[in-house]
Structures are given as C-alpha cells and as structure tokens.
Image (cartoon, rainbow, N blue to C red; front, side):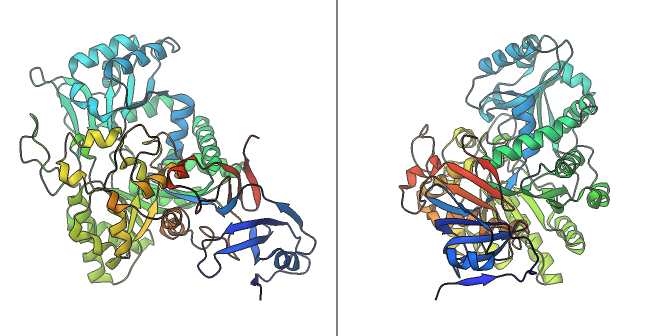
Length: 560
C-alpha cells in the first residue's frame, strides 16, 4: 500500500507544483524515502509516490528534479551571516595562515584604494600571531595603512589588531581602564596600548567603526542579501543568527520586506551585555523585537557569552593553561557570570519564552552552564531547550548531563578538525585536553541532541558539506593538514546529515516548518550531485548542490 498523506485544503485552492525525484531522503523516520511531494502555497500537502502527489494536486505541473539525491533544506544552527556578508563585500580578507609580514603587506595594498582617513577593516589573522603583536607591530601597521584607522579581526573574531588612529577614534589612551570581561593589552614598560584588544575591549573600536558607518545602513541589507545567496548555494534554507544586534534586525526586516530573504532566520538577542555587541542593551532589544519580526525572521532566541576563546586564554578551563610570561603557571581563565547569576538570567529568559545560546569554549564554562541549567530545573522543572554553543571542550563527566538536562550541543565542526586554529590552541592548552575535543560520538551515545553550525565568518566557508566530512572522518577535508583529531569520536553520515536537518530544526525552534520533508512543512529542499550514503566519506566535502528550493520555489540553480 503506497504511503499517502495530505493536508486538508479547499477545492478552490490553486495547486502549485509536484516535485519528483526517485531518491528523496525525507529525514522522517516514519517514511524515510519518497519519490514525490506536492506543494501548494509553499507548503508540502502530500508526500509519497508520484501517483499520490498527483492525486493531491491533479492539475499541478510536475517538475523533475536533477541530480542523484534530494534532502531537506539544511539548517545552520550557528552563524553570523550579516557580518560574513559585510566581510565578503566590503572588507579586506587575509587567511589565518599568513605571517604578520604578509598581513601588513595586505594592509599596505588595501590602503592604495582607500581615501585619506578612511577605515580599513578586515581579517582574519591567525591566533598564532597574538604573541607578535606589540607596540612595534602597531607602528608597522600605522606605516602600512598610511596613518588610517585599521581594525583587523582574528580567526576567533574575539580579538582585534588595531592601528594608532583606530585607538584614538575609540578614545583609548594610556589611562583607559580595561572594560569588564576585556583587556587592552599594554606595553610592559611604557603602559601604552600595543594595538591588541581582547574580548570586550574590541567593542571600544567596534563602536568607533559603527559611528563612522552609521549613515550607510543599506550596506548591511546588501551584505545580508549576499550572505543568504551564499548559504542557499550550499543548500541552506534556515539558520540561527548567533548574535543579533539592532543593525542586524533592521537589515533582515528590510530584506524580508523587499521579498529577498530566502531562508528562515531565528535571531539571538544579547541577554547580557555582550563583548562583541557594544552598546546593545538587552532590555532595549527585547522591547524592539516585535517591531522587526517578519514572516521569515523570528528574533526569539537569546545569546550569552560565558567565556572567550582558548587561543587568547579567555576561555574558562578546568585545568591550567600552559605557562606563559603574562599569566604564569596556574591560570585557568574565568566565566563572565557565576552559576547563580547565569541561573537567574536563564530563569528570566524562560519567563519570556526565550531559549538561550550560551557561548562556552572551555570545559569549566561548559560545566558552569550545565550547573546553572540544573539549578533552573530544580526550581522550575522541565523548561526550554537551551544551547551550549561550540561544545569544544567537555569534561567526560559532564557528557551525560546534556541529555539529562535537555541541552543542545551546538557544534562548529570547522573549528575542531585539524586546522590552523587547532594548532594555535595547542600552544595554549595541554595536549591531552586538545586530544579529546568535541566528543560528538560520546554525546550521541549519551542521548544528547547535536546540531551543526558553521560559525561563519569565523570560518571563511559556510558550506556544511566539508563540515559533515570532518564529523565523519575527524580529518581536515581540504587535505592540507594530516592526521585525525579524536578519531574515536567520528559519527556516521546519517547522524551528520541529521545534525544539519532534523536536529538543527529542533534546536533552532523551527521543527514545525523545516528540517524534514513532511506534510505541513515548508517545501525546502537541496538537490545534490551525489548519493551521500553510497560514496566514500572522503568525498562528502565535495558535494555540489544543483538546486535549492525554499517555500516551493527554486532560489538557487547551479550555473545560473
């Protein structure tokens, strides 16, 4: 008996389209494979055989999809796509493998195309350069830029290398105090700022840059449009924007009002003062979110930074960092909130119906986040499904608590398979700890929900396909770096695909409309050039998306 499931629709509803392919992977465990779906007004009204779809919409046109396989539109659980669009359209790009000399050469070249006094903004210099940024390096940056203000982000996006003119624009001088949860790195002899800013200190220069650009909000709209097209080309039709400021909300509302937002977007508003969102007050943003809400943009999630990143020793670790001249031999970093403080913020968020993405890159911050959620559960019982973002370092004892407390492990695979950033982490964190990074197999075995994200533009390519290959092989998909990182933590292709479809939809809060091909959901599809479950794992990263469909319309076609 062929499977036939339909939505109720009126006799005079206009039929739309039947999408047909012999291998449609639905990610619905009740009906994993179908050959057709009927789409009316952007929604799936029938799935099953071609005959089933025709019975549901007898007069619909039939579109034969190309390629070898069809999967649900993918979802990216963690990215900053408007920032990424800005970087690709308007900023200087340097890969994190460049030396300091090469970074300065790139600045010098960029300066030839800039007006006097115009900002040079870009990235991403490698975290391994942190130890080379001193007052002399800042002076070399000044010379390369011709005295212009310069702000360069590192590969974690948590630190900045800035010029003297940028420091002046931000009002940073010898006696400027370090902001809470940030550090203005200073020369040990003179006390002057070296040009290296860590964590919340970056916000001082970001604010100065925002003031310089505040007359050009249309640039953010075009940046968002560019980034969405890039994501559609990878098969992505939904995402969680992981740090949603007022400028981002404004850009997304404008884009959707113009009919150009071809993806579901859930925004993550800062729930506490965020080091990378200076001047954005949580209560003010909460009051504004309904003003910016649209059909496709839902500013309903929250974001908390509980620590920084291990490359600058701002992540909170259970074991000490490797000794250095600044921090000594027993430094572990710290969290931005205590467990009681975090539990209170989360309780306030749950009263508003806001699920929160908690940035934790260290194992101590991960433990603190789980402890806070445990406190919350002890008072309030079952609640919302919060995220621990990145989930890079997790003490083995904490792994079962993800499932016990209903916490999502928000993964960023490109940040933990062998890469430049991993080599930088090895210079700050003890080898045995690095060698148990991202225990995704253990999380799965413990029953945790894992969901995949790019953290774009922290990584320059938002494509989920190399990321999935990294999850399956634990090796660098590009082949540049040899070896495997924790190969015993590899997972299967089906689990990796689920992390970017059904699991991600549940984590983001879009399970009612995305993540699987089922009746009642949006007709969001990715048409692929290969059969994922029949190829070698080393070929996953080369997967090409031939078409992407969003709400029943083709929003990307390869070669078009």
